[in-house]
Amino acid sequence: MAHFSREWSEDLLLPDGSYASSVHDIERYLRRNNLAMASDYSDDFRKSVRYQQEKKLRDENFAAFLQQYKRLIWNE
Image: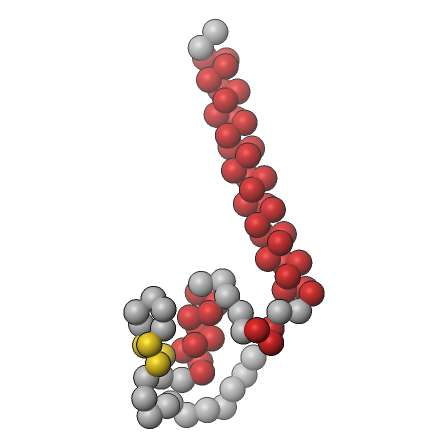
């Protein structure tokens, strides 16, 4: 998303305590926190977020499985 805008006359306080002085700063904050504007919630975006969450869960479950498997092997 490209915006040609100048800096605002007053800074906007963001939820993390930082200040945004332009649209670019807000977009940078959203990307850094894996957020998006309401207008950006397309089907592809939702699929991407769902895939990332499922991948994270699979990775955590696999790590837990490996840890339990190692315990089983070494404690016999």
